[in-house]
Image (cartoon, rainbow, N blue to C red; front, side, top):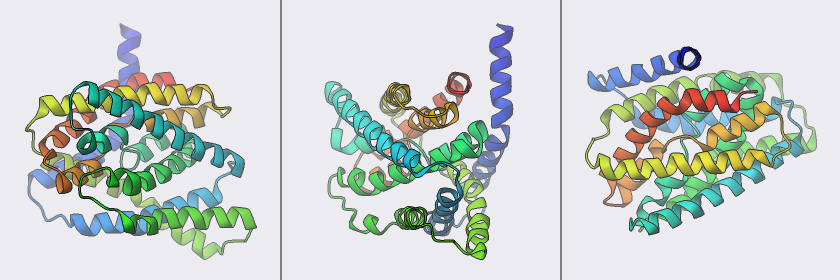
Length: 297
C-alpha cells in the first residue's frame, strides 16, 4: 500500500506543473476573463505547432528510418483503434458516424505532447510529435469526413502537414537550415505546450455536463481501446523503451477537445461529446500513475 501511494505521489509530483497550467485556463474561464480563443487556436495550429514540429523533426537524433517506422505504426494503430471502436459502437447501438471521431482519436496535442516530454524527455517528444502530426492530419481529413455533412478539403494544406513535409525534405536532401530559422522555430515552438494546456483548461471549464452517462461510455471506449492498441503496437516495435513508452502513452490519451468541437458543429451529439471529454480526461488522470509506471523503463 505504501509503495502504491508512493507511486501516485511521484506521478502527481511530475504532473503538478501541467495541472497548474491547465488550472490557469480553468480559473480564467470560471472568472470570465477575456480569452481570445480563436486567436490562440489559429496561432497554435498555424504558427507555433508547425514551428515545434519542424524544429523537432529537423534537429532530432532519431534516424529517418525510425521516424518512418513511427509514422507507419501510428497509421496502423489509429486504423485498428478506429475499426474496434466502430464495432463496439455498433454493438452498443450508438450512432457510429457521429461519435467515431470522438472514440478513435486521442488528445495527442495539448495533453499528449507535454506529458510525453515530461516522462520520456526529448527522445520521447520526437516520437510523440511524429504521432501527433499523423493523428492531427488524419483527424482533420478522414476523421472529419466521417461526420454527417462535414468536409475537410482545406486540411490537406494544413501548416502542420507542410511543416512535416519541409522537415522530411531537409532530412532527405541534407540541406543546412540557417541558424536563425532554427532559433526562430525553437522560440516559437517553446510557447506551444503552455498555450495548449491553458486552452485545454479553458475549454474543459466551459464544457456542459449534460449526458454524462452516455459520454462516459464513449470516453471509456476511447481509453480502453487506446490502451489495448497502444500496448499491442509497441510490443512489436524494435524501438527504445523511451520511444515505445511515448507512443503507447499517446495512443492511450483521452478524447480530444477538438473532436468535441467538430461534433458540436456538425451533429446533435454535442452533450454526449462534452461528457466523453470530461469523463475520459478525469479517468485518465486517475489512471496516469499506472500508465507512467507501466511504460517507463
